[in-house]
Length: 196
Image 1: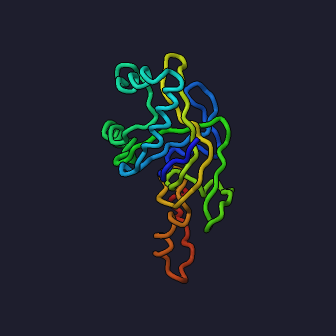
Image 2: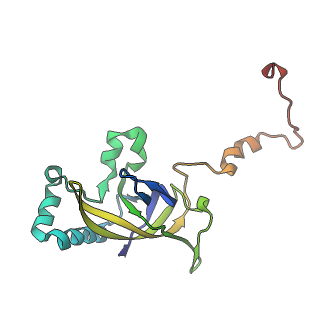
Image 3: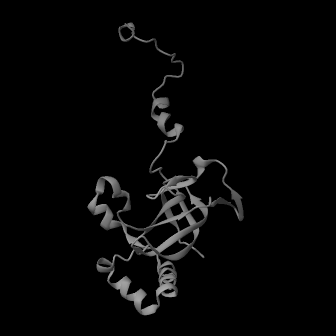
């Protein structure tokens, strides 16, 4: 169990669980780390989880030959995904990423000065904000799949940013509209031709 570096949240299903490929409901988040972020502590924790399960020699061999063994490593290069499908994964460019999930709802907090307070409004933690998380790494060998997964424990929002998905803020959507309104403008009528 360790704390991640700062990441940008995406696919943040942290308020309500969503079904995975097997129909199991889980809370999920995709954590995007800028390429300049040192992920060594996470990589070491992931490798230690593999070594504890399969032994050092086999774990290192599966990692080194991932393409042949199908070994699923949790830390991935976002540029590879972004290049393959830029329309869908363009936001991953310049990032490394990993997915984390849990069957239990994560605790979601924020910092207010030197105090930690709970976030109660789901709109305050969203895809696009920046956060840190506590996670744990675990080995798995299920239905022919083998690798290391990431368990999501708790989340701490650090700062806001542009939303990546979902419903945009009402203030943002109507800001330009409001700027175009005259101070004494009334509501216009509807053309009768559209009602015939």
